[in-house]
Image 1 (tube, rainbow, N blue to C red):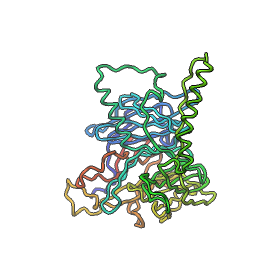
Image 2 (cartoon, rainbow, N blue to C red; image 1 turned 45 degrees about the vertical axis):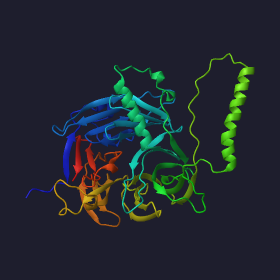
Image 3 (cartoon, helix red, strand yellow; image 1 turned 180 degrees about the vertical axis):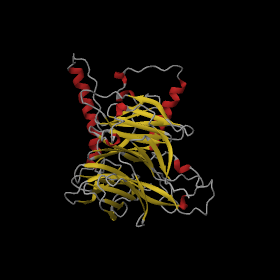
Image 4 (tube, helix red, strand yellow; image 1 turned 90 degrees about the vertical axis):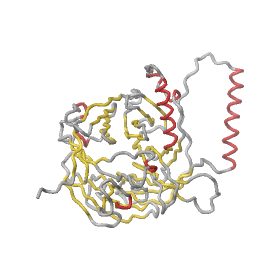
Length: 448
């Protein structure tokens, strides 16, 4: 009997020259400046100042270059690419980039800049693309979003707003009979339509290294009823290993604040117009610099401080009800984001990374061409690079199901969330999968 294998080879990037990214050196994928984002048959790799997009076909399995993107970064501020992620809609696939100066950029697969917008001055630590699917047994209010995480700050873009901007850009591009080359100086924030977003200061328990909005939560007791939604945010950092906040869409509920927000801009505008009539400046008008949006209200809920423990990485389950958090002491905490209670703890996993995966448990009740969500159970894949293994644990308190050897210098990846996937029929449900990228051999494999 042939030995059972738990991995299926999908493709290889060994035939592509990636020496400028450090390929060929031992452990080149462990470079902290190297960012990877996976999509179906596509891999984006960023190294501070440029992004390479690789694609491979199912037939050959060998990768080829799709595009090389060099963002127009500020040399004065020593700006670089600090976050990378795919944005995948029904028929639109683009690449989202976060920079060290707080800019959110979107590029097409042709290398064209679609959107540029300042979120907040500061290094963007992560772009988190997530959606909550509708569930009959739970709240039916689903939402899709892109979260931008900066040290102590979290911003939220609604998926529908992003989709409108992308659809408009593609429609305008298709209507053009020729492609005009843009001057790099014209690629400023003012030349693009501003996408609305909310931003919150979550520095209540110290600066955060990662954060996530876990879902919609109920308003606080005795709070005035309004149409605003409240979100629950979980942050991890140096001062507090785990923190939780209630985020409000409203920036100010006070009557005085509402008056000031209406009266003060009009007053200053009137004074400025009058001063221009009296004192006409001979100096040329300077282009105003983009200003960050005011913070909305964030109410601290709870925190876990256990010095010298520091939170390092945060991973959310598909529904947002569970979060796996790694810390500097080699522990992995499983957090119930609704009760804000740690329900499980693993020890001895230094430098680990986690991804949620779904495992088929009811094989007899489905056919070969049918997939139903109820036939899958949620598991957690823990990559322990110092041990050279990947372990699969059943959630929430289930046993360890599988242990797979993982070569040194490998990464575990997961395709990005696809917007609009909640409209897919139940019989064609696509479970969460985990992929292995071997840095030495260049082989990309999928966990069976």
